[in-house]
Length: 598
Image: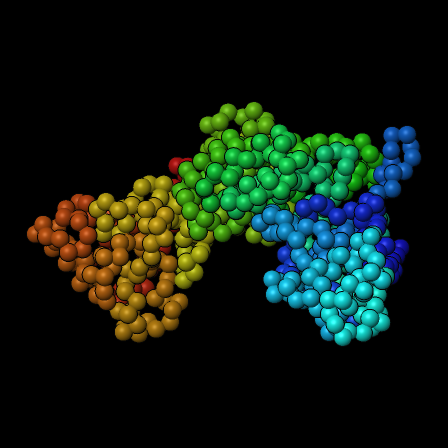
């Protein structure tokens, strides 16, 4: 089977096919990201007769209709939209939608005397030698003879024959060739993705989510465009709420629908803990509703594929679009979204810096939506989702083969007679005594502050409302929220002066602690056995030098919640390795107690 065919077509023909709907460009597949100078360069290349690359299309698989006939799918433009949009903007005068969803004209000017293109500007508009917008040459009413006469009258001394030849050459760029690669409709999504990556390795590689979005957007029968816009606008507003008015004004048709009303709340949502992109939203909605993990399967389902017979049936496509829409609506539901975030924050994850795996949050939301859909009581949902999120972080559950693991997990939870029993069974396998006492301790032996295990330790401190090191009132969560700095218990320069010159030694996470900056300044380069004795003396004499703790019991409690070994009062550089080992074990115990009490 041939994977593709290669043909050359004229720009005029391709634009005509797009206008007729034979090639479908998803309306908001991607905002126009080229700057005006790049559009100018494309026009110049066409004028000079230089090749401008290929566009790539993929015809939807043909589906079997209920009456037994075949419906031939449209071709989806999967690469080349920026070039096609640039052509329609420059030659046809159409407005483009920029990244902020505001519409704008891109006007390319042309100087027939110098045969030079430029982006239109006020100076060019005042210069009679320039035509400020080449789109005027491609209007149906354009008259070459009339234009040449008028131009020559405004620019004395120019050769009318030469001007006529130049402008005629410009107008004829609509007959320039543009290569078309058409991928076979029999190819599966994985093969289509691989072909695209190989051909377009120097450009922006499309993901499977991009193919899914294209597939959704070109569907006219089952509400595809509204589903697509709901996904795209929700994710855009989650990141850029200031663009709400531009979207509303730019797309009045969609903004008058109930779908837009269902997502408008996100513009006022200021929480940045979970800011999904369209890939995240698709993955959550798809896995939740279809109990599958591979997005490639979603394209097949939306095309109507019967996985048993390998045929494409219209009723499967119809059902798949309906189910996907239900999943998307569940995802963007304000109550669902905010309740899930409350559960996440109740684990101690109060800032995006504490979680580096979007997969953990995505599956957490999948699990939340699934359990709600199954009618599980809210208290049980809260507990199971909380524990599963933390378990996933501790075991790096979704760090490799996330799609397969998503599918395995969602199906097991869906089939479980008692979700808490299934959670307990997983805990027994993944979080054994050996994990808590050995594996976790060894994983805390790192200098990487973005370590998920260190993050879980901080989450434990946040959930317990622990005070910062040597602080009486300031809680660790306040320092994290304000992006405070981590400080060394054994000061960095002190360790370096005692032979610990490797950053992997002095920057061990077991040597890190959150404390107020003013306390750290007073500690400076002192050894722990010196500054901790001064703190102890502060408690005895009721003076204030390090923070505000003036009670020995409060001091010991502060050391305990920060997992500082009790021997810190007499420790110096010679005890550093012992200190790290003891603190790692204390940190691991705190993490275990935290998890068991979620």
